[in-house]
Image (cartoon, rainbow, N blue to C red; front, side):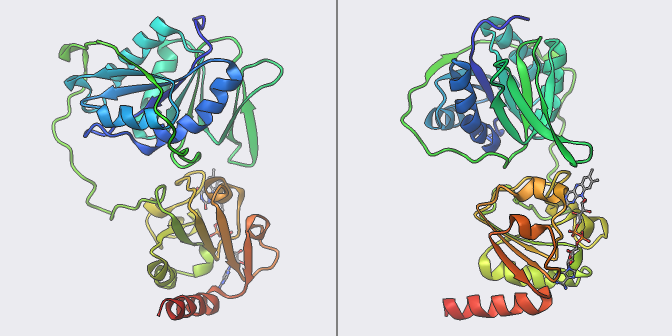
Length: 334
Ligand code: FAD
């Protein structure tokens, strides 16, 4: 389809209580830059039930227009209902590009919408810009197992769609609310929603690990040597009030669960402080943490690539360095 406007849309996914998931608000940050460069408006699309809080959050983070679809049939995400709503809105308003958070639901919604609209989708983007020659969105994402970064254009079809993982961009500061709010009445019949939620069972297997929202992360890699080694990592995390992360090598070895994995096939994180212990700094690990504000690396190999991205480099055995750090932090707090 042809774009009717130069607007950029951000799908602001909601929780069942009507609040916004962080990733939608984070995406308003690059969304603003792209919309300005495209010469259009930044539009947030909010779907759910009683979504006043999500609308407010989008308004406070720079949305110029907010399309709201509120109704009981949208309380829980369903592929059929959400795809129908987005496609109906796209056909009515004709945005030129759209960002979707790569949550479980976003990863389901993006491909379905792009297929229905016969356009392209670039998944799991790590940076976004406008291609200066063509004016298309330049979607950059890791390719070939993360060994190179590919920049992808979608020149022939609209809207251009991309997904971005939580934590890749940071939430902007709150600004003055200025959005024009448009309530759209779109109803989907229950019979047109082919899936039914019978019961929601909370994941009881693993404690909830909020790596994406963590301000401090202490991560361990193969260098911790085994599951016991993570006790040393946990001690530092405890004194700092930090969350424990891990490299894939540690996860694949069965030392810690996948919920802790940082990197291309784990979580993308952007804490204020990231402490990498016994992690070499493979590109797939860096892909998940290099946007951290401050990176401290502890590694006994002075040539380890992690030192290339570290703000503070400690060359040494983590089992000697970490207890000293823990003691010093405790002393400083006493
Ligand atoms: P290693 O590379 O083995 O490094 C261990 C480090 O510990 C070394 O630098 C060593 O000097 C140091 N060390 C050893 N003992 C000590 C000690 N006592 N004190 C201090 N330092 C010590 N990896 C991820 O992390 N996340 C991902 O999401 C991810 N996704 C991937 C996706 C694909 C498609 C592929 C192909 C790979 C992916 N990987 C990922 C794997 C990645 O390529 C690396 O293999 C992995 O990150 C290595 O983990 P590591 O740094 O813990 O282990």
